[in-house]
Image (cartoon, rainbow, N blue to C red; front, side, top):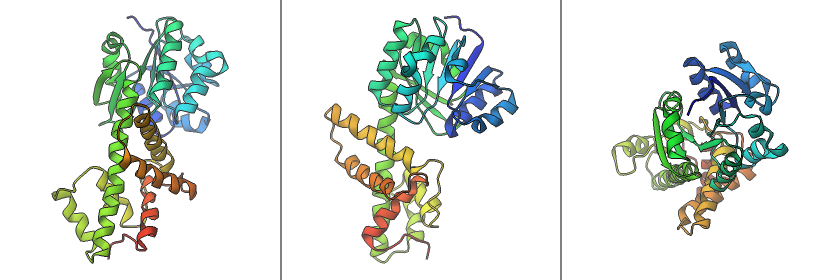
Length: 295
């Protein structure tokens, strides 16, 4: 597969801007578009070109990257307006969608690409550069052809199967991580109500059976009451809900996730969607009638 040098990145918010910066660092001729021009400002200063629409960004580009909030936005941007973005891409071009998406939506987009002589990889990501992980679904031959390009933005790149498989893998990992956080908060509340200083337990957990990456949010964002984190509650709640919906479709047991899903939904309904995701602890703290704070 021979790809033109020009690439586009549509959606340069928190995650998209980081990946776009990696492409610019690698010398890619990059055009960017976002609903907010100011989001693209630092990238433009670094050498990216601005396009006034997603279609204009994609026009003539051999590779088009997207990083969007969720399934509804993917459908709107890529399938809406008579799939104008896809129509603007030249035959043989590749769409790389890094959105944490519904696998069925990813497959629909892949089918739409195929009818236009385009290729599509669903490639959601976890973490941030330089240690970012990417899970890729789509045609294996296409994946192998452009793998070096994927590795410019992600340190760990995994091919996981046909179209939609990347989204399945990402939702499964999100399910594990954010249901684990709920269990960790509950464990801390058990200790707190049992008379153990949460700060002391926070030192014990990383060297005990309770150790996990998800637990890190407790000493870093909950014990100080800041609830600050790199991701918002809205994003995490959306991902957990998508994972639970997938579990229902494939008849997988998901009682733990359904409980977590309910708590994240309650936190959103409380108006905390724009806050860091650890703020879900406030729901559990209210139920326990105590707070997890350093004493």
